[in-house]
Image (cartoon, rainbow, N blue to C red):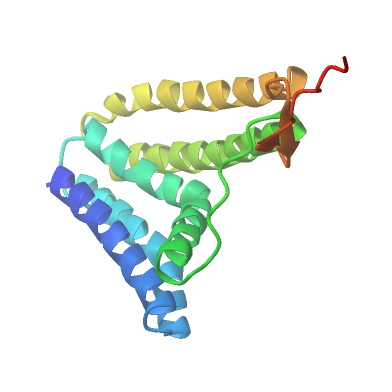
Length: 197
């Protein structure tokens, strides 16, 4: 049952996101668009509540229940940036907006970008850990020991993202020789100097 709910929530998330962007850029329904996009986390909240009541109803805990909790954590941590990412591409494709810039690759800008990803990951991890712990403490469901492995997985994700951010801070990635870089992105190449004869 939980697997079906997760798949349904995943489909609903992308459908609502597409509807929200369509309402904004193709139909010019700004208020409808805002309601749809702001309501995206409600989908994952509903999934978590159904998971909670499933366990309260006597279901045996499984990794899928923890996965449902992680969806809400991801939605809070990464949802706004995901909506901005989709919004920029939809604007470019359907409403004549500028081409979205890729993530910065070099220098201090890359370091800042990696710290943003790290912050979002830490928020997602903190929320997911809280929700998984709530499932353990407040449902009295059998088999909640299966959730313990999620603490390790989430800790690994947090540590890896932090190490990546630190590494780009201590050892910033340098652009190739001859590259012209703006805001951490290559925008052109210098012409080689002509030797004088």
